[in-house]
Length: 492
Image 1: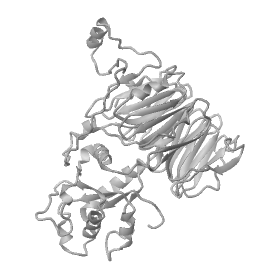
Image 2: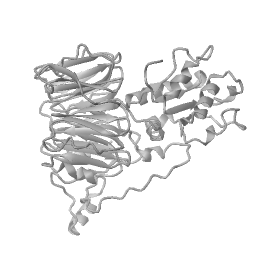
Image 3: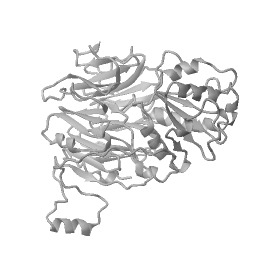
Image 4: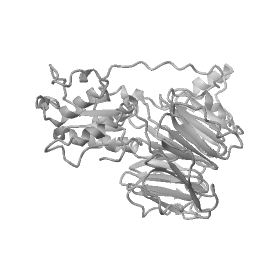
């Protein structure tokens, strides 16, 4: 357990809490969090005090509490007591997860006084994805692993969470002032007669390429969008039930995803789409002119990234595999180890090491040259665009290197970013307060996304940007030549 950095520590009791603890570990890991779950000792025998050293390095501690989960805490050697009392003493961000039937004991066990005052969530098997959504909002850590080329931004669908028996002291979200110049919007759920009346009143319901087009998702649905990504002419959505859908250009079959199931991550950049399944296998469809979709034999994969004509996969042991074109040396990753994230670009591949440094191979430093990016440290997530490269630091600042002809690397003043992405000549950032900032080329009015507020997810194509608000509304700006912004079809 030493030598590896974790952000989230899961404390649980073997009798009654192990299944939920494992499920939470799987879901949070899929979303990019570095999670510690002690399973080697099976929670039995003599307490291993090294576990507390691991907890000291974590910002968040999740306490899984089954019925009578604190009853044994009267024993001063009880595992759960030792873990949770240590978390309280160290002032960790504690998040209780209350299983059905759990009740807070009165009085509280000695050493756990005050635990019951922490914000928590109630487990609900029928709405488990929404439980995880709410849990993520209570964590102070940021995800590390990238969904395609960016951070796995937390999906904040509070409307679904209202269906749960959530237990927490509600903290009011600060009001974000909307732009005074926000264009008229079209909502997919509005009846036709309402839209007709608006048009008669002079309110435009249609949008041209470059204007902000919004479609309203159904609130309260248990199936929600958890990731968005874009290619050269299509947009892909991943849902909480592991299914995938896409709109836009399908000339190569890159949108033929109806049979995909158990998918936990998606990636696309050009004219093919890649998906990572929960069992560590990979599926790909679309343009295969360079063999970039020949990934069916990959196993033990924890992350994938699609470039222009090559695909990159990260194995659980920190090594990297590739498929497709190697014309610029972008597949020269045979010696890579200790990687925690990968990102594919047009003719390059990025790798994030566990020590927070970044390496690039391909055309950037010269054909076939692999080199560590100078000056980059404490990087927690990476993004590879067409010809510029981004790194998100743990403190929310962003580093950039590469082509800056349109000012796409002019992001040195960014702070409190939680997600980054980029397209052809532009960079997009999602910030902790839900706003979006775009730097770079504006030939397709990409910078109109700067008016977005209350955002939960962002994704970039080559010339378009898509996003989802915290209420489930889908928004887009940029090119729409192939219908890649016709987002109504992506509604859950």
